[in-house]
Image (cartoon, rainbow, N blue to C red; front, side):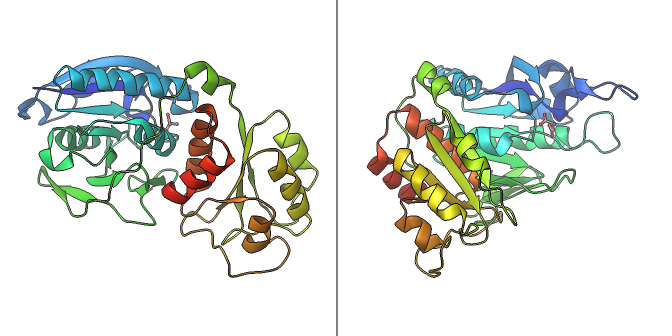
Length: 327
Ligand code: ASP
């Protein structure tokens, strides 16, 4: 039995120095060599270098290929899988993987906020914690997890909430599922798994284009039509409980006749409401105009779900039902 480690790059694997700055350079073997205690784990790490890029350079296709490779590793007997990647897009890639990960074995994402050239880099501790979680029987049947800063988060809830802190990852709506304490994996709560999406055709996914508009004070109404042109769907990050400037409401209503438009909150936590406010541009008004309620999903996760749904050929009713389930 082993835990398989797939490396994608990110700060955890960066090296170099001023003035050029650090770049992704370390191999998985170099990464693991820097982790005290990793060699003593009951399950050896089987390291597979996949990419060495900043996470801004990752694509849906690459993440879905990774999920396939991780699934093959599990089918071949791996107890669990760890993925190291940059933290910038980790909340999206982990959620994307969670929507299609059918296995009981844990698929655990991690990364680092402080690169290996800094005092107190967090990558080694995060990698060790992720390997422990991937090997833990208690972490089975929880879907895709994120192990970072000795906390264990569900991919569906986790957010990157700080640009530099080693405590950047949090699950504002749910809290962490558990912790790694003195090397022991302690799960405190076990949410039910999210319903899986059907397999996605990669070419159809690549051709599926969705846009995100975040509401702002004195919003530019003309922007929206241009943004949504040649797109098959739109996510709106509304103010507060799901509001936009009144002038935007009819524009969004017209767009919702052409494509699914999903309403989320730009606040970072909490749900879009359904029937509290009634003004033009309020959540109730926008739903009357055909917008889909994104529930507790933040705009970025909503974008992932919408794009996958569209790529699987889901119709409007199926999209609304999926957001009711996942949101
Ligand atoms: N910019 C880096 C990346 O996402 C940040 C990190 O890894 O933490 O690749």
